[in-house]
Image (tube, rainbow, N blue to C red):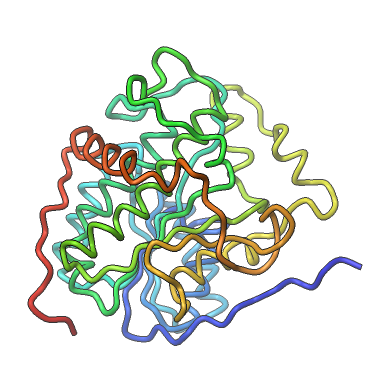
Length: 319
């Protein structure tokens, strides 16, 4: 008999504002759906407007009173990141939760973002780094604000070559993905350290979904190939017991985002064998992901590449 799916309670989020990137499908959608069900106002930050509108409709069909909306955000374009942040800054609402979820995986050949960055590093890390920095003035005004950044088990194979961060000399699909997910985890931990030093009042945590069936296994591996079917990762995840559905894959993210015991600088993932399936629990991070020197260097380089600096004081008082 297969194990029964696990679940966690999501505390009441009434009166809070959350932004979830990549929220039109998969883990991002399930995260947004659960937050909306708990009473949060949720902005679905999505690249495809039609898919965003469809996701909003799906949530409202289940929860007619849900306060959900979709806004355009392409993390592979720093101009789009800036425009999205400006939209929220103009609304001048304190932001209580930012979930850096969107990503692209295992692109078979090297592609670049609108700004010339290697696509996976540019989207998964630099786009979210810039977004978080631009939204920081709203986050520091939030009610017990949190930033959750979604990493991956693939961070274990990740290495950062600061002499070739854009993989111009040597590119490998999974090597580049692993590097971007290592960068996500280094960023989440360094953000907590800088918040602590600067008095920003943020809780920054990371999560990974283990082996979860999403569009991630199709979109990236098929980019530029003309194929539509799944690649090797999709085949592996189709094996019985090898993967879980997004409803459960989203639980570590939801725990990091709302759990009363989630820790700043913490990392959460499934508690099953090898961290692939199960309920949320503290996850193991690689030694490279815990290197504070590497994290500080990545931060400085990310500021230089994106032009986004985190020079924001803490607010005088919080709501």
